[in-house]
Image 1 (cartoon, one colour):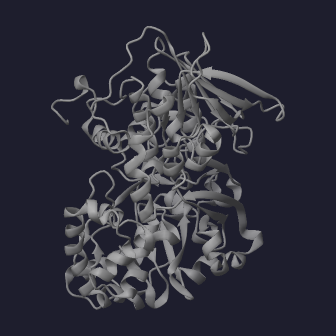
Image 2: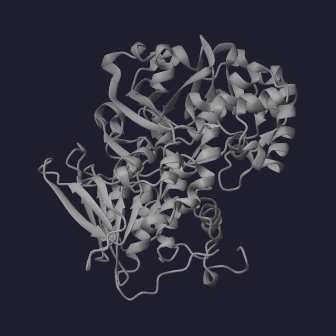
Image 3: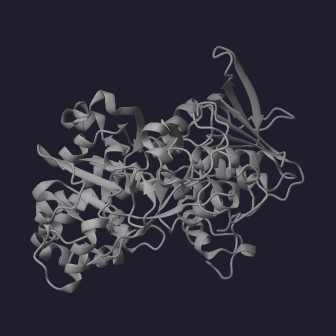
Length: 569
C-alpha cells in the first residue's frame, strides 16, 4: 500500500492538537501547500515547543542567561531534526558525550577503563554476541523485556544493574522502567543506524567518546519555526486555546467538515467555542488524545491509546556541587583505573587527567540497584556557557526572521538578558575556568546541574532530592514521561497503523514509537504526508531513511510512487 495525495481542488481544513515537535513539523509540511490546506494549531500553553523549552537564569551567577530545559541535545544521526533547525537558521554545537556511571566501586565510564569493566569482562564479551542474536531475531525480542533477556543468556545480575540498565535508561529516557523495556530497544542503542550512539567494544562495552549535538536556544527555535509556518498564510496558531473534546468525526451537515472540535479561549475558561474541520491530527500524548476523543474514541483507539503508560518524574535544576560529588563521580580519580593492558589504556588514563568532563551521570540507589537517578552537567553540555550565540555556531541558511536578528536573543519578556546579546558577552565575568580547548567557561563550583528523580509512584521513597540545598535550587519541574516497557511494543507500536487514518484522524508524537525528538519530528511529517503534503526533505537519504521506516511502522504505507526509486525505496 502507498500513501496517495488528495487531488481535490477544495482546501482541506486541518485541526492539529499540540504545538510541540510533532505538531510543528506537521504544520510546517502542510504550510508548504497554501493552496491546498487551511490549518489551525491548538495548544493550551502560551508558547510552542512542548517539552522543548528554555528557562532564564542569572547570567551574573552562572555564566549564561538561559538553559534548555527538558530537551538538551541529540545524536548526529537525528537528520530530520538537524535539517529542520538548519532551515530555520539554527545550528547545533558538537560536544563529546562523556558519561559517569555509578559511584565508588560501582563507577565506570566511556572515557577510560575502570576496575568495574574488568570485573565484567566475560559478560561484556558475551554481550556483543547477544546483540547480534537480538538483531537477527528482532521481531521476537521486541516482546522480551531486558531483565528476561539477561537471564536467558546467563548474564550476572550486577552486570545488568550496574552497566546495562543505566546505559539504556540514560539514552532512551526509560528511567526505572528499563528492566521491563523491549530487548530490541537495547540492541538499537548499538546497532541501529538511525538511533545508534555507541560502537560496542568487547573490552570496555563502549568503544569511544561519541559526538553529541547540544541544541541552540529552543525557545528561539520554536518561535522562529512558528513564524516561518505562519508566513505562508494558511496556518494559524491558537496558543492558550485548549481543545476540550471532539464532538463528532462523521458530521454530515452541509457546508461543515466531518470533524467537530470544542475548545476554550484563554480569556474565559468557561466559554466554549466550536469549529469544524476535514481532518484531525492529534499531536499530543496518548492519554490526552483519548481524553479529547472521549465517547468518540473507537474500540481500537481505546485499546491502543490506553496501553501507553506514563510515569511522573521531577527535575531539579540546581548548582549544588556538594550534592553532585556525594552521589556521582564528577572528577577523574586514578584509584578507579583498571590495571593497564597496554598503551591504549595508558593513553586513556593520561587523557582523563585533564579532560574528564561528563555530560551525563547516573547512580544506582543502594537499596535497589535496578533503580537509578540521572543528572546532567548543563554547563558542560550546553554551548551558551562557553559564549556561543543562542542561534548556535554559524548560520548555514539565510532569509529567516531569526537570521535578520541573528545577533539578538529573542525578545522573550521572561528573559532577563539584554535583547542585543553578543557572543561571549553575557555571563563572561563568571567564566573563570576553561574547557580543554581553552574556551572560557564557568568553574566547577559555578556549574548548573539538572537532576532527574524518576517514577514518582514506584521510586519516590528512594529519592534523595531533599539532600539538594534549597538555596542552590534554580527550578523544580514535573514531567509526564512515556514508559518504554515491552508491552508498548506489543500493544501500541504494531497497532498504530490500524488507527491512523481512520475516522479522519491521524496521530503524531514520539510516544508512537520511542521517546526521541527525532521521532516526534518525523511523526509530524508522516501525518502531513498521509494527508497529501510533500515530505519536506525528499531526496535527502539521511533524513528519508527514518521517514520511510516510520511511515511503514506507524501508518502501514510506503512512500508514494513518485517519491521512491523502487518498490520500497
